[in-house]
Image (cartoon, rainbow, N blue to C red; front, side, top):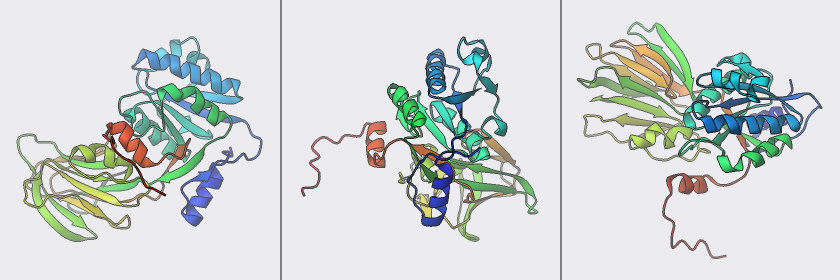
Length: 329
């Protein structure tokens, strides 16, 4: 199924680097979206039903996926009428976009499906901070109308490609991340002995609780809590932040998006785990290493407005800006 505007956006992004290509209407084909809602909150079911009904009235077919218990969706008077899917690639195959109603955790799980099917994803925040969501709950109706009217644009967000290897170089597992990849110690009674490597050269060895490798999108998440800087999402870079490192040099590093970052563990240290976006994992036995590169496939991010990231940062973190006068032209 041809997605209105999104193929054009992908082509423009590849050819010109433009991350703000407007969505345009293509051939008149039957439109369909995947609606993902966090069913753990009763209020979300009502809002999801409202969104699904509005989309259907606007001529868009709706699929529904529950991120928690699917039973409330199946029993719901309105949502139970729509086609229901589990967390599979097929859930998003052929849809125009994935619409997420929930917080950042729900968004990341929905982005996993959208990424696998290479379709755009739109987030409406129903949680607390909700940094990954495009708009807030009170703007749900307007957001749905924007989708119906094809009044949106798509930008690419950088991802990470992850490969874990054992001491002999055999692949233990692969994965990807939109926010971050974290190497975490499984033994809470001691530190994880690691060596940080950039572009196949050693940087530093230290004991720590873990190492975070983040995208600019993920710099406001786990990496931020660990003391890392905030990176504007338009920036192409890889951020490296240590977690409770026992060393005099534990400053965050911002490296080229073309670099390879690797974290090796000492053969005599504890086992570890690689956690991608908080829910995909690869086990790392002692002596294993994880290699992180820029992912070959970005996440296609639906934008409904052109508000600068600065405004989002101030709003989400409630930063004080009293007294600002701005430039005088």
